[in-house]
Image (spheres, helix red, strand yellow):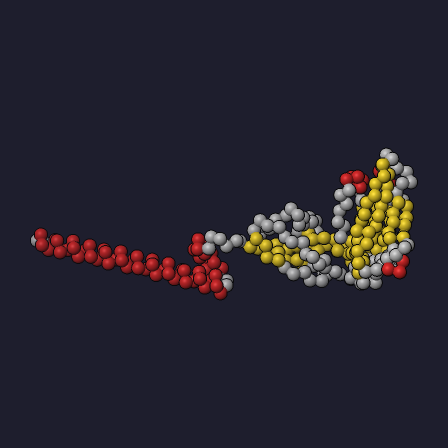
Length: 250
C-alpha cells in the first residue's frame, strides 16, 4: 500500500471515528433532553410511574434544590368521626388536630403511633420522617378518669387534660372522675369546687376528699362552654389552689 493510500485510510478512519463520536454525543444529548421532558411531565402533571421516579429523581432534585420533602400524616379515628390528613415537611412537627374525633359511648384518649395504642404521639416533640398513620385511642364507657400528681399541684403545671363532656351523653362522655393521692396532703385539707353557671350563677358544686366526680348532666353547671374545677389543698401547712379546665357540649 502506498503512502498516499495509507494516508487516505487514516484520514477516513478518523472521519468515521469522529462521526461515531458525534453520533454518541448526539444520542446522549437526545437522552438528556428526553429525561428532562419526562421530568417536567412528572413535576407538572404528577406522573407516578415508580420506575420513572426512581430513574429521574436525581434530575428532579438537581433542578429543584429548594423544594422541601413532604410526607402525609393520616389520622385513623378507629371508628370515630373523621379527621383530615396533613402534609408535613420532613423533620417538622405535626399540628395537633383542633377538633377531636368523637365516638358514641367512648371518650377520646389521644393519638398513638400504632393501632394497638402503645406509644402515644407527642405533638410537641415527635417529628415526621416518612408517611405515617396516627391512631385514635378510645376509652369505653361514659367516664373520663384523670389523676393529679402532687408535683403538678406544687409547681402549678396542671396538664391540659382536654376534658370534653356532653350534657346529653351524645358523642362525648357525660362524666369525669378526678382524683389525687390523699396521703400527699395534710389530713382533711382537700376541697373541690365548681362554680354554677346560667340560672345557677351564684351557686357552687363542692366536695372533699381524694376524689371528685364531674357530672355534665348536673344543671347547676351544665351550661355549654368552658368551666373550671377548683382544687384546694394544704401541704405542710402551705395552701395551694389549682384549676382543672373542662368543656361541656350538647
